[in-house]
Amino acid sequence: MMKPSAGPRPAGERNPNCRRVCYSMARFDRRSVCSTLCLMITALAGVTGLLPPPAWAENAGLTAVFSTPAVGSKNTADHSAWDDLLKRYVKPGSDGINHVDYSAFKSGGHSELKSYIKTLENTDPRTLDRPEQFAFLANLYNAKTIDVVLDHYPVKSIKDISLGGGLVAALTGGPWKATVLKIAGVDASLDDIEHGVLRPVFKDPRVHYAINCASVGCPNLGTEAFTGAKLDQQLDAAAQAYINHPRGVAIVDYGFVVSSIYTWFQSDFGGNEQGVLKHLARFAAPPLATKLKAASVIDDYAYDWSLNDIKH
Image 1 (cartoon, rainbow, N blue to C red):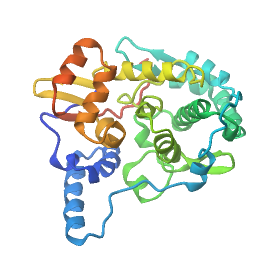
Image 2 (cartoon, helix red, strand yellow):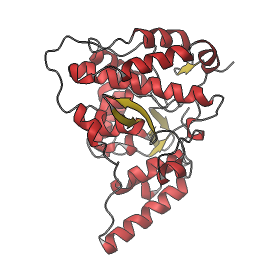
Image 3 (cartoon, rainbow, N blue to C red):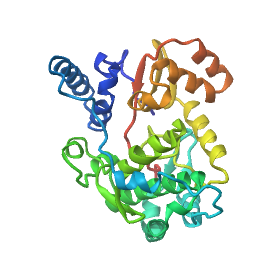
């Protein structure tokens, strides 16, 4: 479940120039450090004019692969193996969270998972249309995330797994910046998929409900693979499930506490809190939607990085 603080979020996290710093520091579980660092960076940038807002390093080669879809193509990638693995090892819980049986997955399905990932690495996504490309990337991202966790299981959090990837990766932990895949011959990290292609190329905020970071606070890992044919339906269902769960939106005594996803990536949800509230209301069930439409601010953000492991 989300772990809201006792009051509204620190001022540093409200600064748009600091959200990506806070994103990294959140993985480091140092909220106060995040806010202090953000304020220092903002002050220094204002004085010197030399520090640009934090940015993700671009993987131009991977972005180029997905620059032009195969419009009208009937080609599809084969996600049947991944679909079968999800149905076997992802268990919807009574708490509204899909948990992964990592122990059983590691002993009974890990080799199949690696074979599926290799199949996608040998698939040319340039032959796919846009919905199929999205499904390809989301499934590959999620499958590789599970693969990384299984390689290091048991762990308490994906942040405990460090695969390299530079200074930020060393500070924050996690496998996101390490080169772990090859797509159409291009070396790629999980961050390259998310921040280099899915977010900037597809420009659909529902991407955040499609990719899973193996954490309780993240939108659910689905029990079926994404496909181009069902993509819109699947993305809407994922958004509705998350927003109508307390880890997406929670009402507390001092107001709304929403997932930190909506401040880390606020630019994907309209660029301000009003845009976020409008997005949330779009997918919220009627009682919650009414309250969101009447709200003018978000009071706090929270996220739970605990592994989305099934409880044996």
